[in-house]
Length: 355
Image 1 (tube, rainbow, N blue to C red):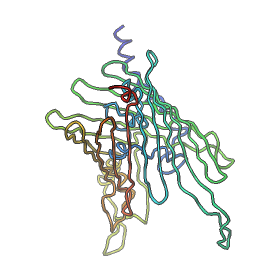
Image 2: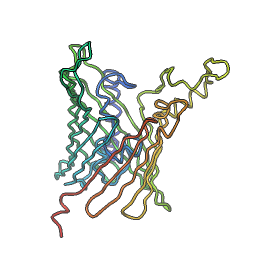
Image 3: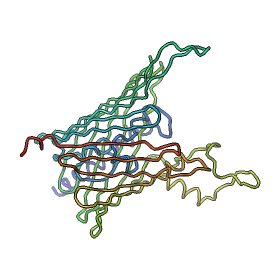
C-alpha cells in the first residue's frame, strides 16, 4: 500500500517525462522552426517580468496558469484576469482568464489569448494600393489543476490554436502538462512540458509543421529573513544546443585581423549552458507592493547588437494591490529599439458581493 501511495505522488513527474519522450521526436520544433511560435509569447505582466517562462511561484495567481497549469488552485475560484501588451509598432496582445472550482473534479481556468498585428496594405507591382487586410493569432485555453496532497500538485492545459493571415489560415491543438513539488523547507520545484500537439490545418496544402515544444524545470524559494523570493529556471530541457550562426550578430571577430575568433571547448560549453538559464526574483515591500526582475542570458545573446548592448535580456516589473484589484506592470528589453509594455489586472469577482 505504501508503494502504491508513493507511485501516486510521483505520477505528475512520470507523466511529464513520458509525454515528452513520446511527442518530442515527432512534432517538436524550436529555434524559429515550425508554427505557432506566438504561443510562447508571454501576455501576463508578471510572467514577462520574470523572464517569460513557466514561473515556479505558488501564490494563487491565475495569470501564471497559462504557462504552468500545475499552479491552478481552488483559491482561483471566481478570479478574473485581464492583460494587455503594447508590443512593437502596431502589434498588440491581450488575454482574459477566469477560474472555477468543482468538488471532486478539480480546479479549472479558461482563457483566451489574442495577438493582433494590425492592418496591411494590398499593393500591386507598381506600388498602387488596393485595399487592406489584417493578420491575427489566437489561443483558446482550458486548464485543469489538482492538489494531490500537501506536497504534490499536477495540471494540464488543453489548447486550440489558430492563425488568420489575409486569406491564409492554420489551426492546431496542443496540451501542456506540469507537476510541482513543495518541500517542507519551502523549496518549490516545477517541471512543465508545453505545446505537445500538432497542426491540423496548414497555411498551404502540405504536411503539418511541428509545434514549439519545450520543457522547463524551475525552482524557487521564499527566503526566511529577507522579504525576497528567488527563482531559477532551466529552459529547453529537450534540446542542448540553442546557438545558431549569424554574421549580423557576430561578436567573435578580431578587430585587428578581421578573422573569426574560435572559442575554446570550455567557453562553448559555458555559453550553451547559460543560454538555458533564467534567473529572477521578487522583493516584497509590505503586503501591497512587490518589485520583480529577471535576466535571460539566451535572449540577450540572440537579440543584442554588438555595438549597442543596452539592457537586452533584462526584465523588470512591479505589482501593487489597490482595494480589490491586483495591478501588475512590466517591461522586457528584447532589443535596443524599445521594450514592450505589459499590464495585467486581476480581481476576484466573489469579493464584490461581500461587505
